[in-house]
Length: 301
Image (tube, rainbow, N blue to C red; front, side, top):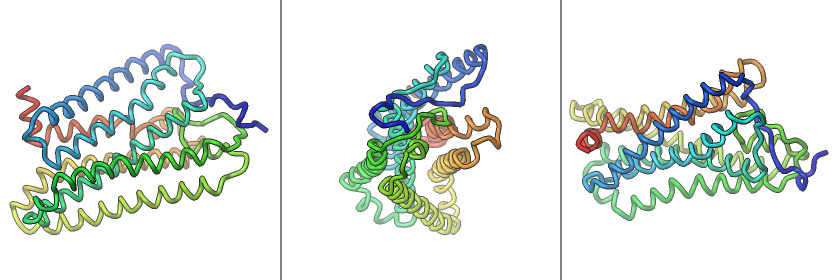
């Protein structure tokens, strides 16, 4: 039985490709990661330098792009190294750090999307109260909420596993995941299971709030032509980001549930990393192209 004191690394799986295929995948992955960095940084810099964009919706978008970059940093550099390496191992501490970054970024994405839905709800359903509700102090508190909640949730979940005695070091995934590390525990921890369910409950509440807010938004916007125009202009990009994120998380959950042999390895890998491929690129592109002020500012630059 392996003891935590002698377990110094984990072995990752999923890269059973030939050397030529790895080189091609490395080049494509590097190109994709470069594009993700460029489009997010362009939107971030545009919002920062243009004072006209220092409004709630754009500030929340700024944080969504920062969260996207933060999450990809936890995956792409290590994945690119693995593509060029014959062995796919990661240190014990590095594995927990990678899991923390990737999943706290996902939590932050969902928190930002929930806050953006709240912002649109107040702007469209209670326009007369918008300026009094979305004050600088209130916006700051919402931004702190978007980062503090997922970071503290993932920190408590990670620490509940970190000191457990593990009976294995093989992780059947391209990257580290607290759920898969927890399965390696010699004795399942009640504390870890409890924290996991608390985290799930918190983000289920996020989804319920998103559904509730958009039910009200649709009801209000369908009543007038102006309302439909506002919904198309400001809510449509948010819905695209939301559906993209939801499908990505669904793919990851399907991989975790069915990824043990029912699907091809390539499809399993795509399902595992889809939320690190599509949303980080789609979010800045959708908002950069759809929101007039950002698009005009970018084209002007």
